[in-house]
Amino acid sequence: MKIRFLFIIFLTISIVMHSTYGFFISFCETTSIYWFFANDRKWNPKTKILVLGDSQIVSGILPETVAKIENVELDEVLYLPRPSQQPEGILSDTYESIQKLPNLKKIYVNLSPLNTSKNSITDAHKQLFFSFGNFKLYHLTDPLLRKAYFGNIADVSWKFVIQIFPYFGLSSNLNRIFYDPIVQSDLTRRRLESESIQKSMDSESGAWIWKSIGDSPSLQELDEFQNLNTSILSGKRNLSIQLWNQCFQIWKEHRLDVVVLRIPFSPKMELDMRDKKANLVSDGYLEKIQSENVQNRIFVYDFKHEFLKEYSYFADLTHLNQKGRDAFAKLLKVNLLNHTNSSAKSM
Image (tube, rainbow, N blue to C red; front, side):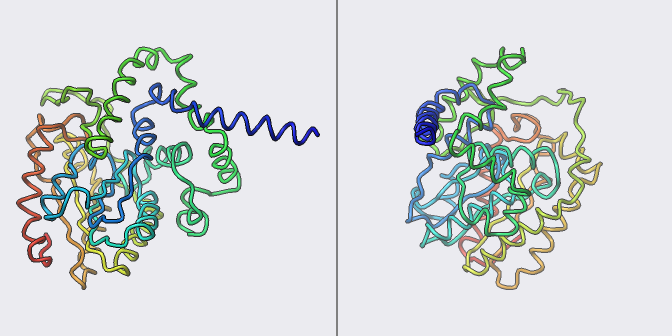
């Protein structure tokens, strides 16, 4: 009797949490808000072009731009980037796309030091997956994904707890509301960002100028970033490289063309990365996949030397703004249209 009573209590709590936790999303930070709404994206089996990656894609490329370059209908482009995305997330999306997209022909993805090194984004991605990611069996059966997400039994247990009681996935966001004055003063902006992100999901599949709430943020040359130090990006995360290798192997096995983009960061960040040699690992990996591209199915476009004087093209250190996105779209069309016509040219 007690067991049945406890089961009914826990079931009721779970149902209440699942039906109400969406109300609290607007109190979360930007990346969590985006991941929550990204789960509503629809997988269209007609999809021919799949766009994967992180917030550089979100802020820098519209699905309409890809559709025009590839000369396909807009509903044949599936736009799935997420902020703080890492190669484990891209591999996870790859497995799901192979199952759900029988007409898939090509993948767009961005690669940079942010997803070849061990940095704060790596840890943020894992937390976002635990809080908002959809759990699949291959997260346990694939050894690389299991290593990335579930290093021990406690990780597995915690993911199942959050799946059943989703409020626990919001705890790191909501707790700070009660003691952090910076978060308390930011609640109005978070609500506006939540509305803006939800609108972008409905109208542009989630393409969204980072931190934009109707305006278009812009850097100035005189802006100072005292804590800017990209030296951590110079290191290699071996697991990331293994995960990338697995992605490219699966894409090769399924005879998919792959467009790999190195999207530019802001001038000050690019210059700091050059000084700190933060591009060595990602540049080396881009060279490797090009040298092994015997089937001519991988097209690498490195744009890190573009926009080195165009401060006004960026919303912050890492994301293009509206003006920058428009300029980058023109750059993509000039460079990519040649290979979409011939399917044989890479940079």
